[in-house]
Image 1: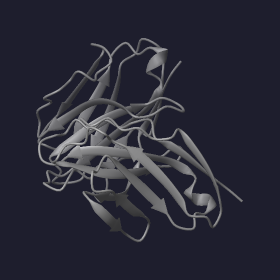
Image 2: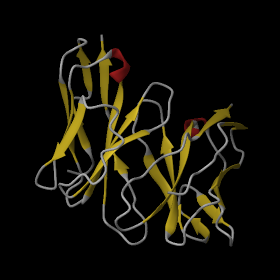
Image 3: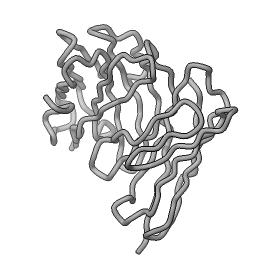
Length: 111
Length: 115
């Protein structure tokens, strides 16, 4: 499994764009990159997934450079309710079911 | 059901007692996972099931922990002779077998407190 490295914490203010970068130097050809969000006292929930270049949905964008050794989750115009822990997960589809999460990034959005 | 369901949502037990935690995955999901999360900590992988089989049990913390899955559906995580360090939230998740990566859907967790 590709090991991931993320900042432990980040601070931001309401209305700002927040970019959280995850390093995964040992990513394999078949690996996908998935980001999850976890609020206190809740299970993590899926945000976005990508393989290369850029993926965008109604919540976030995911930027993946050509070498795929890192990825950046971009949250536009954050609000207080975006305060949460964000996990980057790198894994391949199919039969690779042992999914190990890193420590995540605690994003704190301030008023 | 619409999502992953776990029960009980909260459990307080005395040290030394056995507990069973139940997970109902999303219907049709072939993979099922158990994670443990201590207060303020990250997700600790415990075990996963592919169908009813658990190919890798190395994440279970000790032989007091066991898990089973039946009918490629419900799973039970059993902790025998609970200890205070077992206090945590136990999260279950399920996913589909897919070529484009696994998207995992988590339940809300079972909060276990050992007193």
